[in-house]
Amino acid sequence: MATQTVTRAIECDLEPERVYAVLAEAGNIPKWAPVFADAIEHIADARYRVTKNKASFDVEIALHPSAGTVDYVREMGNGRRGGAYLRVMPRPIDGCTITMTVPIGPTASESEVAKVLEQELVDLVQLARG
Image (cartoon, rainbow, N blue to C red; front, side, top):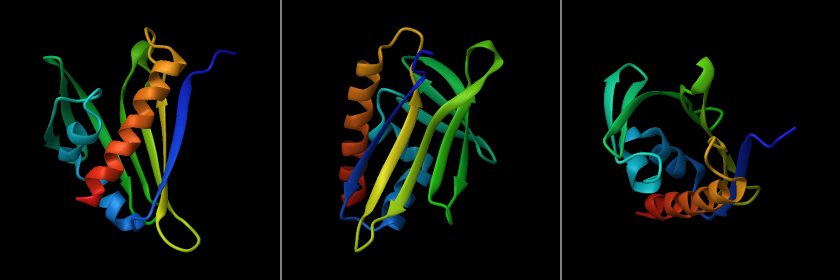
């Protein structure tokens, strides 16, 4: 069976709540994930319109603060739903681990997606540092 997703993680010395706050604020997405979004606009409730390269699509953001999860889900091809699934978990002494899983698009390779994902995690930590 072919690989369908890529998962990467990064550890940092930031408190989980600080990183989670950055992820939960949809307007931050273009700052740390510019490959995914140039701009994002709130539509209603948990729905947002993402613009990338002058094309737009809708995404639903599911927030679960007590679990440290943020999911960005959209309609994919063939009527399926998918997206980016992020987890912010406290480390035993201090800081946190951030894990993100994303799908591999039909025209992308696993290594290409992994490289982008690794950079997005670095950029996310930098943004959370302020």
